[in-house]
Image 1 (cartoon, one colour):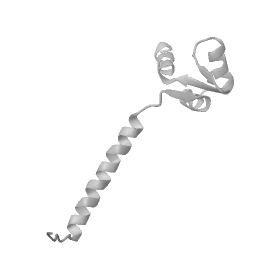
Image 2 (cartoon, rainbow, N blue to C red):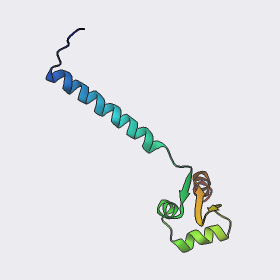
Image 3 (cartoon, one colour):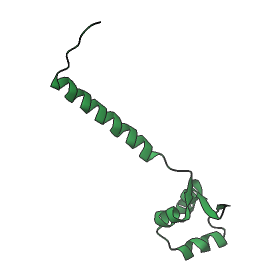
Image 4 (spheres, rainbow, N blue to C red):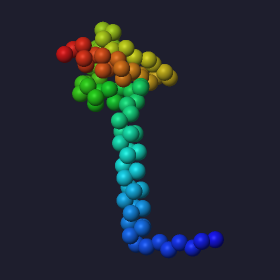
Length: 86
């Protein structure tokens, strides 16, 4: 069995590499967009009120799915709505 000596510099280098790897993992997670959003998330994203969001549903401008009393909106449909309204 070989004995290795670890210095402070080795630990500092390990710490730097570990922090860099953690930052990379967090960036990947942040760039992934959820496929389905709840009403509160859509209101924040579009900066609209509950009534406006209800009108978008009634007019069939924005499709949704209702599961167990909770409304879900497809993120791709929201993107399409935003690009079509430009």
